Image (cartoon, rainbow, N blue to C red; front, side):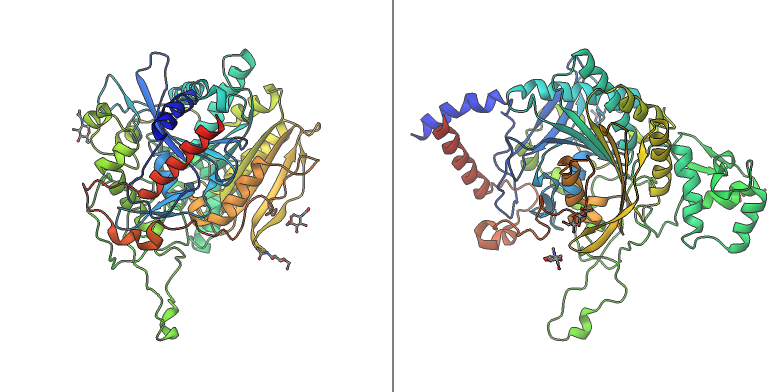
Length: 563
Ligand SMILES: *[C@@H]1O[C@H](CO)[C@@H](O)[C@H](O)[C@H]1NC(C)=O
Ligand SMILES: *[C@@H]1O[C@H](CO)[C@@H](O)[C@H](O)[C@H]1NC(C)=O
Ligand SMILES: *[C@@H]1O[C@H](CO)[C@@H](O)[C@H](O)[C@H]1NC(C)=O
Ligand SMILES: *[C@@H]1O[C@H](CO)[C@@H](O)[C@H](O)[C@H]1NC(C)=O
């Protein structure tokens, strides 16, 4: 009977290209009600560039819900890390060995497809060159296009006509507009297999370098980082034409070696304003108000990460959390804390790196020997890729215009920003999108507050084309830094889901709507009634989660029954 099921099931799996099903994930503490698939798609026609993907099926209706592609930035940082550290359903415990649930994961109503891009990042690799680390904007866009083309071809039956959206963060502010242009071209020419490209969401995007740098000087001054005397001097001496300080082009006083990281050119104005571009080492560039605390109890070997404190990454620091003291409530108030997550943002990178370098985890994710021979270590962000990278597009303005003007289907951009990020601040991105909206003669709708669980979650503003078919939503997420899904999990899940399911006839989205996503989700049941965490494996141990195996067999019987 069981054998029969397996025989029947095999073609069903292969039909969706899904010999990549993840059947057991070591250290899983809960019983997922969704499946995941991990494997490779080709990122060039020669099939020498193997891009790793991890697909998280929707918790709701995997057969109808859209595909949401996710890309982390860097350049050189892994989207699989983004799954564990931000929007995926699995978060890693501080022991680096077990996975607990992110109840606000973005696969609530979407099949989330994480791509480790470009080639060289994470588990992605080149079959000809070990440690391949050559990347640039156009090559990355092409790799992403080819990888998605290969994905949709392989899963034609399941996903060929499915609505799909792009999403990503930070340097994906360049990946996504450049890829969107290629997709629109490919759909128009008939080259791309899925025509239902519906929208793109960019979080804290690196989309316009001059606008981000210039706004960051203002942001720094207005967040208490400069003496009033110095600011007066900036206003009087650093004008680049006109007297409106908001329109000064401070980038005239900056230098850069790679088009991404800037420093003073040695002038008076450069020396006054360039310090606004970076925070001190003991602060978090990615969240102005987030602290991590020394005195950690977390014992993980220092794995994987490059030693350099590169600006576009989360700094590695230690953290400690003072757990509740039921004896004396006076001890429960921790006056120093700015941390809602028991230090998770501070140590998750180490925990993820430890977890993904376990051989049994790599087995579960179908990572081939070829990758293991070439790369040996999975790292969150790849230093050689970043170090050789030189940005090509200082602004993505033309790519947004191309999509809005040339695409003959309705389309929506969501530009969301955690409002306390300094790396890619909300103001520079808002300036860019205002210019794009004006260039496309779009209506400006009023900026309104939006809510999550009846609390203010930020502001949203809509720009709409005269015929209503093109929309740009500008959303700020209150109190979030660069990594919005991690800093504000619930609001971010509500936001991204509403983005994919516009409910209003006029094409506008009410980001406060909580009909589609449960704002107070109940965690899924634990394995072994909750004792899973006590049996955390030692590094190198091979474990199988009984729960995923059981649910796989259930799925097999259901599939077989349906046939
Ligand atoms: C700017 O700062 C640099 C480094 O401290 C210094 O060498 C240079 O003289 C300063 N420029 C001016 C105009 O003061
Ligand atoms: C690739 O780089 C890693 C980390 O620097 C190193 O351990 C490994 O030996 C390299 N692989 C090859 C084949 O050179
Ligand atoms: C928000 O407020 C309304 C009206 O008071 C209430 O019915 C609802 O339960 C609240 N929602 C949440 C998530 O607390
Ligand atoms: C948006 O949705 C919220 C929550 O359902 C509701 O209270 C509010 O009235 C809606 N706003 C508009 C403009 O429809």
